[in-house]
Image (cartoon, rainbow, N blue to C red; front, side, top):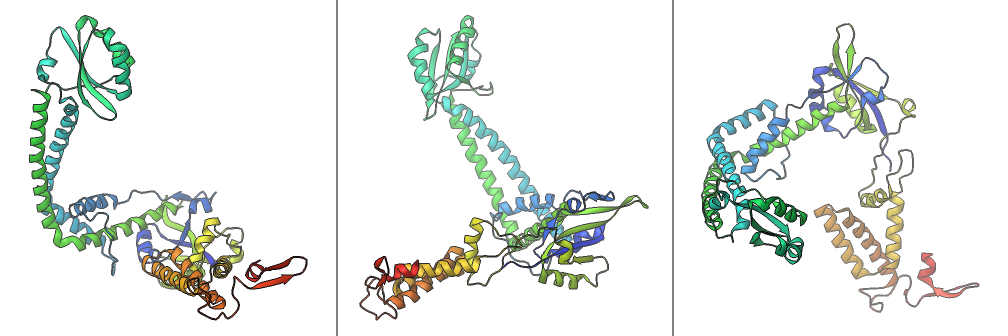
Length: 449
């Protein structure tokens, strides 16, 4: 069924919008419209633009939760609403407690990343058995570190290498690339560079900070990385130990920040009224749709709040507007909304076919697949999926299984056997109907048509 909707205009002092949303509006599923668009042409309206004060704290609490490996954890439901000041105090206190160790983690992580970059740079040349500093400081011979794609390296060896005044020393080969370095006299450098470039040679620049053979450099870098990893894990372990007693408090604070940030983002739908007399924006305007029942409850909740004005418009005044469609059906039919939404949500003023789809689908399924045993299994399995996993398709299977069981009783079919139970109606395989001009046809087929 299509739920009746009401159009509301909510107004109040400009600085009271966050309190109003947090105390009242956040408890409702409201479909907001852009107030500036709805009231287009009003010269005294301005957009409500401001940056969220919660973004910084959300990033900071995420950083703390990363130590507890709880950043993506399911957030607990809050009983009551934590004040923002309490959330800020908690974050600042824990940041101060963990600051020395957190700074060490950042310091060692930066060093580790630099070492890892150096390792990634030099490791492909581990097969080159010559000190890097001697290659870099050669006087009459020039060099280029780099790589070919595997296909281009094959073409290079076949067509170009023999006619190029250079020596190519292979490094590591993987599925995609062949790494290496080529040497050429200074006078031939331009020509050799051009020939290598023509084969899509990709140059890699090796800094002169490296000393020794690549394999020795790689060995030293891996040793340093192991030490840095230990320093990082040791300090992370200390931070985690300090934060663990506050795990639930942090998760609740994260949940509260999410709510506050979502409430704050409602401002993008609001408009500010500009008072020409005092030359500033004084009040906000929010416009949107609530269900008829929710609109009445919202109006009752706010009627004694002098800072909140709610205007609920009559259906006659909003007939030119198109309300959002909200479907509400009995629990037994609700899963079939999945099929309706697959084809497109009906318009607000159209018929909701969910009940019709549920009955016809289940009825035809039962007629085609009537069996007491298999229908019962489908009903039980579908019900468990729907209740335990909240899978709509499970609810559809459950209802279809019920109809399958009913038709199984009518057919006298139990796991495909039709000689165990006496049918209440007929045996599908043997029951026939005589039709004029057509002849004898299966009765179930006639009934289905």
